[in-house]
Image 1 (cartoon, rainbow, N blue to C red):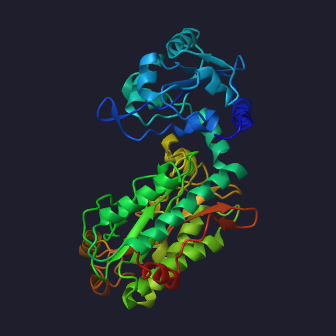
Image 2 (image 1 turned 180 degrees about the horizontal axis):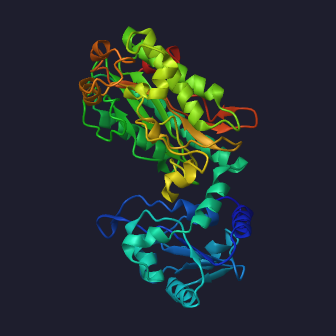
Image 3 (image 1 turned 60 degrees about the horizontal axis):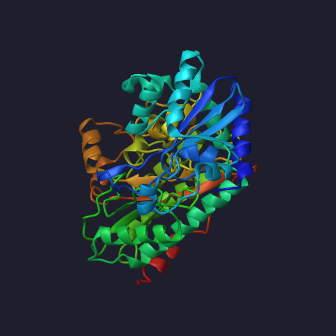
Length: 464
């Protein structure tokens, strides 16, 4: 946790923004894997962490705007729980750590909400992503489970998003800690991976590092020789000499701030000439985007600039053709770069996307594109100092997508399908860094993780 004043200040700022009513926060509970007492690794809800910081299950909280009152609801451990889990500080003592003086039992939450509903008071909450919490809102507020998120407060979403968007100095320190853990994960993976190993051996190795240095993984890692599968969580392939592998992984600090880093490297430690050509194009797109980032610029424009670098690079080796700007405007580049340049980061690895991506990433002036590839951009608005994002361009050769577009004769004026077909088994390359927007540009966060060809080869050829 941060100090109590941090949470007091956050709640006070939120109270100033909200007009009236009650703000209801539900913490997360334990989630069983296959029977009640065998649970997944516990993760507290990020909104609850942001305003209260308490990292345990069976908690809820109220901020009563009208009465300027804050209450944490929870129950002290019974003797039966102490036998199994050990003694715990009382709810009142835990609440004092975040500057809340009023506490009550969980049973009282239902009474509090029922009274508010009868009085016709506005009860604000953010969209829910866990089914058990949706059912709790059904119980507390009488809302149909399928429609709970329809009643989420847009006023609250917008105010929280505005507040959480700009990271404090303490938050930046936490994210840099998470990136430094990722440094250890990525350099270790480069050294550890060898031809003949299975992907799961490396994936398990880096998960162990994340657990030993922080609170574990920020998300299920992508470690695969099939780079062209963007979110590949299968680890059963045997690594072969000549393979490129993608390592898209990150860690959480003990305060649950995340990192999200991607490196692509050769299993045998040396890029082939063709691999090097594609890698250098992606690296140029990554470095160009980072150089371009500055306040007031629309992140969508940075994405398109990165796409231009990719299209121009692919033209140079005969894969694309025609006018580069026209190819990017038409969306032809998305055959090779079918996702967005990056996303917000913080307490969530995709920060605040649980509030609704369009509510956070887009606004009245910045509408989501319907174009393939560009429509997947997860943040598009103008940049402001303190925003933390990923920058993760990539080039992929997806045989099914190549065949579909070729059959449809799509963008034949921009794509050399004969040449592309020679790369259908290449897989792909992605390079990702975490950055914070500054007053004049941006800063790459954390200890620099090898990403030039020479740096990657130096580490990847130095096998454990």
